[in-house]
Length: 469
Ligand SMILES: Cc1ncc(COP(=O)(O)O)c(C=O)c1O
Image (cartoon, rainbow, N blue to C red):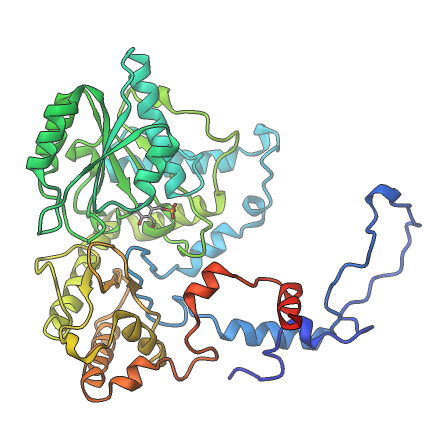
């Protein structure tokens, strides 16, 4: 239960002169800090006793919602359970205390682990080599596109255009732009997949300038792109390469491999498919894999390997599932998503009614006459103890509500969630105000998102200054 007093800001709990620490006796003498490095004024730190600090932060942590607290169906973010064994492995002191500047002779174990992880990823993706420098999915995209750019330049063929589907994750066009490439958008069909006719037109008109086509499969609507072999043939035919955004690799595990489908370069969001929670911008890892022969075109993106702890967790995850069980990940993720979709599609609008992969998108409630929006449904879910699904993404629909249960969840969990979603749909009909004014049970109610984004107050000093205005 959140405590009112200790729920105040730590600065508000501060009392001048109070201490939460005691230093051991100084046996080393004192040293003068050069005047140029000394503070001109006192650091404005809160002054609290230890118990106040503990109670404040313990109360604060109780306000968190995580996969360890409950069901977290955040579509596109793959909030799967992170087995504790992975955390233990990543916390092994000899790995955790590695320093990037340590002599190579003392890091052989870590390098061996990276090499073993590379072998596993090659086997799971059908590609030949991986670089582990990129720090996240988007960084992987940039690294992969730079690899492709280097390859074309080595052939004396400067190609400046990248084809990106209109359904792509925003990082795809952003990475292409950062790489200095021009984006050519290919349309999606009403069923959410790439419009092959539009793609043929683009290739016919601009084929000689096309460096690559970026694809996410399953795409950002959670739909499997069935025409990949034809698409790959078309792109290869004009001299371009196929780039696979592997952020959505989860449902493919054990079912199929990007390398076998004709992709030449890909990145994987290790921090989704292979555990490590995805949220708050990190930590992540976006290793980039290539077909044999392309590894010599990897660019220099960092002097160091990326987030080693994320690699440790990924390897622990793969090893603990083993060759046999890792193949069950994809099919189970797909089964769970389809179970929820089919159980709710009579009350929530399903714009693309087909078999989905690991996630799917509703376009809000079916009955729009109540005025209850996707935002209201998401807020009401908090009252029932669920993290909200992804809302208003993808942008293809007005009231997107994107649900991804992952392979981890039991049928009981899915059934309980389905019950609550149905109850909210019923409430929207019988008592819409209850839903529109939700949440009612959380410590903070509905925040003004626009104000928070436009005028964020992130420090106590700012808060005080605002209060004095
Ligand atoms: C399809 C897709 N591509 C790229 C990314 C970017 O990954 P990151 O957030 O690690 O940069 C994401 C994020 O989850 C994604 O869903």
